[in-house]
Image (cartoon, rainbow, N blue to C red; front, side, top):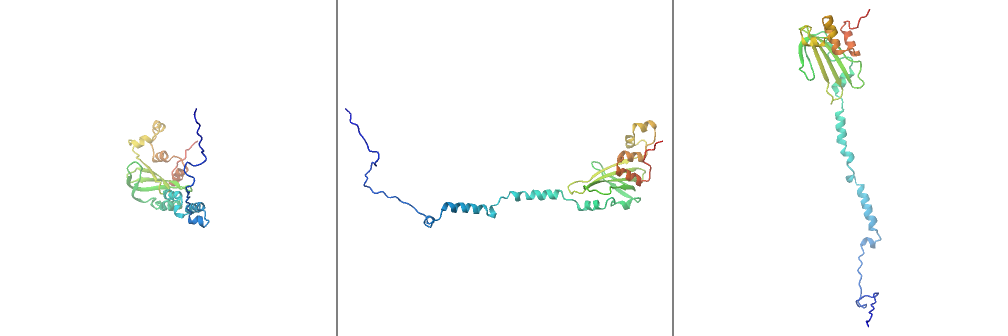
Length: 221
């Protein structure tokens, strides 16, 4: 017959007569009644307001804004040209025989001695870009047609287009400009025909033609 052993778990196994010492460390802040948790939170809040710890994301974008502003800045020289429209810098050269250089994009520039017959520009350019038309007559009997596109923005390059009309029937440019209708009629191609083929009938082109004192209207009966 087995003997059942019962153990009292509510009491410690060791001697109940041993002294128990509990060590409690109390900080000065607790002695003074200060809550350290609130103190830490306050310090964190203060550090977030520190000017040195501000988010620099706004300052990082400043150089980009400055570069964008510089890229869209207007050229003082072209602003002056815009302000004096429809007058052009070379208006005084009209009718004066001298040496000219006409710039062309993607092609060799044209250098020649001759006369600036006429030039035209719009009365104003409120959007900051405009075109200038010119017709020259060289000492060798050719005509030079020039289109210049201006833009007041510093980053935008001006455009330059020019063509030469040679009155010789055998010249390649003359043959290319002639239409099938003109060839069928065997009508000699004039420099005004070439000018209309180059400039068209835009309002500014008509201003240019009137300055030339030549007939460009189509006559009907």
